[in-house]
Length: 496
Image 1 (cartoon, rainbow, N blue to C red):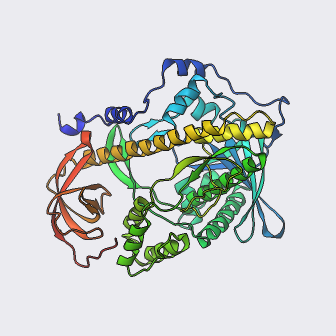
Image 2: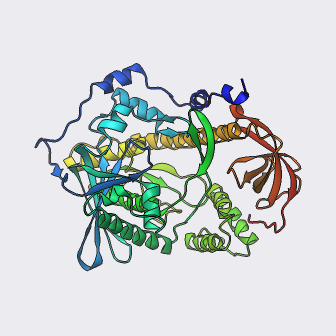
Image 3: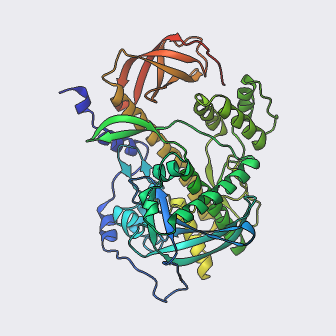
């Protein structure tokens, strides 16, 4: 039996989850509690709008079943576009302090390893009752806002509603159609008026994006290769492309989250905000830009950094993902913080927005479920379900959970890469140096998009050098892919 057949990546994923403090399996108490839950639709018991007749649709990955949001647009006066984003009402089925809630609160997020997904909530809920899949009427919280011709937004209202998804669309299909590289998908053309609807959503998203970019949003692009599995084996690694369909969802969610913050502010409720205060290592970002001949100001300035990145993306698209990765690391991670509505918001440096939270994925992130409970308490005039001190504690815990989930996902990408390459020991590859410090020198291959450590011949290598490396060792259990540098390629240049 060869070594590839002996590697059980699922077992490695489970062990990695436990090693980073997550529960990889739902206890029987959670499953017993959840399996008896039945769908329920408001029947006059609360103030809920019936919006099932609207042409709602979703855009997500082809295999996603845990749909948190659906979208709908209408034309307004003077070129305005009115947007509705419906968010799955998870709170109605996962009450605070229930068994499912306690489990979700501990893990804090669904973890996507590419090998196996560890959902925050059982499939009976997240892929069934609380998923906004087509073919069923669903409870939701609707967020309304208006996109103005210049891309600015006017916040609207939040309210409870019954909705029905009319079409489950796929990122790649819609993205290629919007970009003009394929015909309209049948999932769009088969639904009357959906083509016009998606084109309107695209127009609204492009307005929002142009406005954010004008005000200093950072258009970062990093390479994160996901494993392609076939019959339990790693067949390839692919990089997710940021297409126009993904931009629709990204822009709509940023605007929806800003509207949610405004709503909670008006209600006078404390909340959890998602922030990147200022880049953690701005001096190093300035030094990175200087390697390219750019002079950034001594104090953090999003617009200046955005102009630098835009220029380099156009000038050298092949190495831009690695430059992006450098900037992302120097920016530091986003985090959750509690906010008193009487205090000024901190803001999100990379998104160029002042008011930002996570409210649009309550099936997948616990912070969003907390925000949903706060919103519903404001809608219904109920007692606030969390104190400011509660939210401080939750914010610290969930920030840690997110950091740990990223470590799990990164480790499993390395483990999958090690499996993919284990029978190619001795082969040579072209790549770029992505890290060079006392902690080690790292290289990313051009094809397949694997990152590993240079164990031999790393002297004098700098970030950005294009090199030839030979694979010398893999260890999936430890996530190791090791190379020997055998030479540099002509036209070497530094980018950080």
